[in-house]
Image (tube, rainbow, N blue to C red):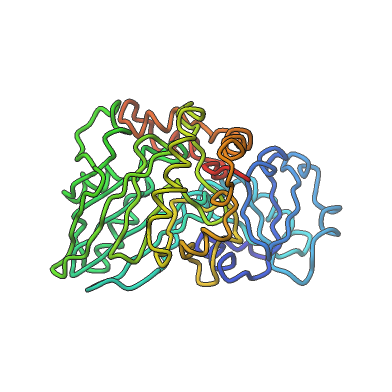
Length: 375
């Protein structure tokens, strides 16, 4: 049998459509336990590659005969060798091209709504839980919270016949490397950062302030900045066209943002509560919340998007319904997951203080999303 190579798009299609798949992950047990390709419709078996060097005869008996099988490793090489061994035993198994590194970088664009003269798109990074956005109106575009795969956004705008005019980051990211500055340099767009998050950056940027309003397209699509500290001291949300609330890492579908990625949990927890319980509750319940991350595949809708109405989240999100302030403080400071991998190095990269090469950037970002508080 010939070993079939699947790219990340092939796997993403099965994730979004919840198609069954059996994944044989041949990374070490700790790597698998920390992070894997997530889908409620997938089955998994983790057998480290080095445990298979003497043969796969016993493994064959444990593999399904009625499901597609995908072999996964970190970079591709080990999984390809295992798939070859399985093929010799009569088992047809595909290999994830580029391994988990490729899965971490894949972006799936999803249209989340219409805008005057255009549309709003969400770029879903299934392997990392990151969400980026592009608003297009009358041939002009704004990009919000872009990942480092800047070419994806530039190419997408070109395909839609739009010129990128503005690039925004809602805050200084600590879990992934921003592509905002690179996109601005490549397209001539203006790059905006909240100034309270940019005190240590070593490059030029446009300061993004509360109630700043940007317009793109001849129909004057309105993008309004809303200061919303708590995840970071400068965190800023966006309201687009009085319809969408881009909440950055302040509010997620099933959780809220953590305030400790700069070591300021005790200092910033009060800001987080003020944003969630005062600023956000003063906004329209009809706003569609579009966060910068998701934590779990159950937060992904059937169309592949991640979005919920603010009014619904105010009712259902536990982090928005803790009446006692001391209880809220305990919940936020005592339910913090491990820090994101290389978070300080990522912050310094986003400040422009260090410039790792591409391979190092990939290594820095490997792992799950860890931007949320679990209630």
